Structures are given as structure tokens and as C-alpha cells.
Image 1 (tube, rainbow, N blue to C red):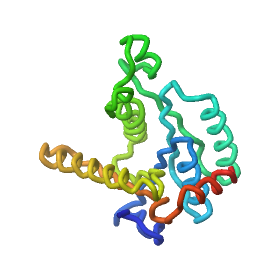
Image 2 (image 1 turned 45 degrees about the vertical axis):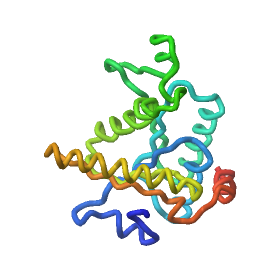
Image 3 (image 1 turned 30 degrees about the horizontal axis):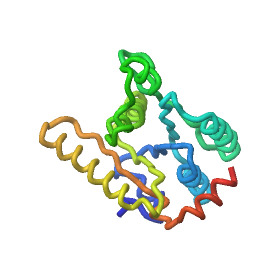
Image 4 (image 1 turned 135 degrees about the vertical axis):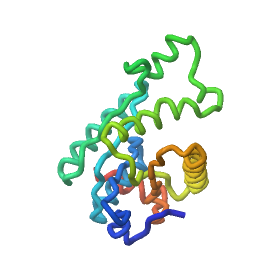
Amino acid sequence: MSFLNEEYPDLMWDGEEKLPLIVSFGAGVDSTAVLVEMHNRGIRPDYIIFSDTGAERPDIYAHIERVNKWLSTVDFPQVSMVVNLKGGKPFTLLDHVTKYKDFPSLAYGFKSCSIEYKIRPVERFIKNQGIDRNIQVIGYGTGEIDRAIKALGSAQKIRDKKKRESTKMKMRVLWFPLIDWKLNRDQCKELSKTV
């Protein structure tokens, strides 16, 4: 399923240059396990990005602080916090509720909330770094293979659309290391405890 395998360091190259390795960090068990196992395997990310909706629980922010301390000890980059912008200014989930007097679409079973508050801020961060080709690391576990397949399908639809529109196509390879490494939820919990 993945474009990458155990010979990962040799596959970071597209033939011309090293592709930046960007971890989408959700601040949970799985994404923390990804970082720990990357360290264990000698794989260093270029960026670690957390999309802050502005409505995270206090324990999430405390966990990010813990992870940042650990990242310093293993010479990994710190977690970059990104937020949704509207009119060039931060616009959080709470701002949405206050302004529109309703809940975001996720409360009604739709996903535009995830796109607006999680995906677009990461894409904007990557673009602002001048990166147009990268490997995006996503911490879907072995129990989430269906989500990984769906993400790969969505990425392919975007590539196909850009080809049809003849726009400059960005290369983004999705990598699901927990699936590649066959790490189950219990193993991820144990890895996460080491931070």
C-alpha cells in the first residue's frame, strides 16, 4: 500500500534531490508512536506539523510540550503549530461557532471542517516553506487501513484534476509508517509512553 518500505532512506530521493519528510502530528498515541519509531529507525523528519483548531483540550497542549522536550533530546525539529486563517487572521473553531451561531460541519457528519481547520493550514505551511514536493507522514495505524486507502484515493483525484487543468503539479507522497511497520494499537501505546 505504501510508496515506501524498509529501505526508506534510499527512497527519499526523487532522482534529483532529497524530498522533505513532513510528519502530520495529531498529538495522539499513533502520531507520537510514529515519531518514536522514526527515531528508533534512524529516520529524521524535516518538519513536524500540528494543526491547532483553537479548541483542543488542555492535555493535548501539555502533550505537545512533552513531545517538544523529547524532540530536543533526539535532535528532531520542534512541532510547528499551524492555524486556519480567514482574511489573513487566525480563525478557530470557536470563532466559527461565535460568528455563525452553529457548529462546524463535522458535527453534522461532513468533513469540510477537517479540510478547513486541519488540512489547509498544513498545506499553507508547506507552501510557505517553498516546498512543492514532499513525503507526508500520516499516523494511521494497522486498524485504519481503510482511511489510508481513502487518503490515497483522494490524493490521486487531486493529481488527476491538476493534470486536467494543466496546473503545476505538486508531488506529495503519502506514507503510513505504522501500517508499513505493522505496529498495532498496543505497540503504539507502549512507544508513546517513552516520550
